[in-house]
Amino acid sequence: MAGPLILSGKDFAAGVRNALAEEIRGSNHRPPGLAVIMAGDDPASSVYVSMKEKACRKLGIVSTMRRLPAGVRREELLEAVRELNDDDEVDGILCQLPLPDHISADEVASAVLPDKDVDGFHPVNVGRLWRGEEGLFPCTPFGIAEMLEHYGVPFNGARAVIVGRSNIVGKPMAALLLRRHATVTLAHSHTRDLPGLCSGADILIAAVGRPRMITPDYVKPGATVVDVGISRTDEGLVGDVDFDSVKDRCGAITPVPGGVGPLTIAYLMSNTVKAWRHHMKGR
Ligand code: GUN
Figure 1 (cartoon, protein in one colour):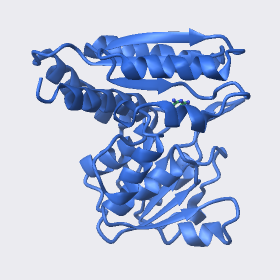
Figure 2 (cartoon, rainbow, N blue to C red):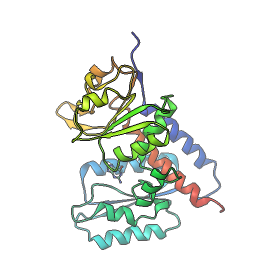
Figure 3 (cartoon, rainbow, N blue to C red):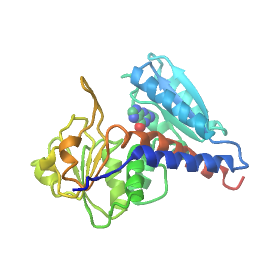
């Protein structure tokens, strides 16, 4: 029997980045600008931020970095955001999470101008997303929706179950699938009979961070399975989906690594270019 379709986010993201690089090269405008704020020295965040800077360099996006100490005052961080809001060379602003405990991520998200909010975390962009309007939307779920569309996964009338209700992945994923006419259920830690619910899904998206929790009893034969979870374990990086046992039951599946991971930065680049296009309009 032929195996499932492997949804390679790695290949798809490379195509997205190439198209963006070409658009930037062909433009007469100033290059796009992305400003990253990082408060503190979380080692994982440092790795992500360097990956973002490298991706910018390769595409011709000018990236600037504001490193602030872990003890930075709330007012000082908000002032940094305001300065970047006022900077005409900056199209996108991203404040790397997690922030130090004494600073509210919600307050920072709300301080970024909505049209520079390349994370899609500002309440205005959340509203635009749910209302079906144009806007900037969270990179990982946006990339997943675009990738599924690219691979020809049908959305219209499909039953989609998303496990995990975070503001960064689960909730925006629900809105994005709803916009594409799927029937969406958001499941979480209080959901009763999770395997029963998931096994009715044509599209199953796992975004909880519990290694290998999705086993074949959660999967409808032929379903599309997307693994957003990444957990660091003694055996290395492990997804929410038990790939080896699920792959023989599903129709399509994202691998870990090389599945959802590469989409996040590709769509951060895409959001930055989208914000830049908007800022360059009429110039
Ligand atoms: N830290 C982990 N994921 C993210 C993300 O998508 N955006 C930001 N700003 N920080 C993160």
